[in-house]
Length: 246
Image 1 (cartoon, helix red, strand yellow):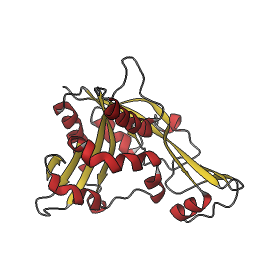
Image 2 (cartoon, helix red, strand yellow):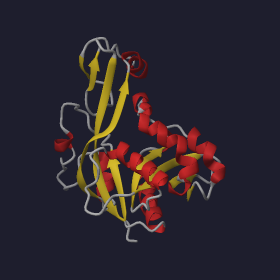
Image 3 (cartoon, helix red, strand yellow):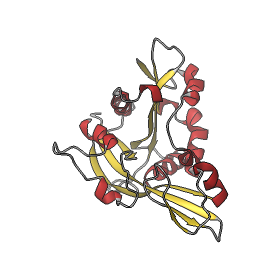
């Protein structure tokens, strides 16, 4: 497998967008994500990783997105997690601020290659790329995909461990095995608003009664206000910090 940055392999930009992923439909409608993915290729190609199998030239088996942003000295990682990293990356680019930290945004493995250890390989490559670009820290607002009970607070689930001391969550476990340290919870890492009709389209659920709606693969209930025709999902993530060795 060959891993490169998109600025090294601009010929793979179409393959980047064509690679299938397993994200639930509702997660494709975060307004901040739409801002980032519309700018990513032209603004941060050196922070985008593309992984190509030599036996399948021109077709990706995995990809990774990250962005640099500025975090004032002494400040904690932002409570708005994923959305916040993207907002700060855009602000740093527009304002001309020099970034001092890199945040992972996405590591995705093609569905037919999942379970083969590629996520750990891509995480290591992302950490190494941050070091190559001169950053001492790679942080990640991690979505714990193993969380099954939307009623369990992330402050509880994120710190649950197995007998060997590693997190019970598979994706958190990948990060910790790679040397990452859980730093804090980002309680409003992604905020996805929509009308009731939009949420029906995204999920196939009725969204016709005011109150919490349990959506498959959502980490918390979606808050639905049928009378006012809106619903909003607020997702907590887990900030993990990796030292790059730079």
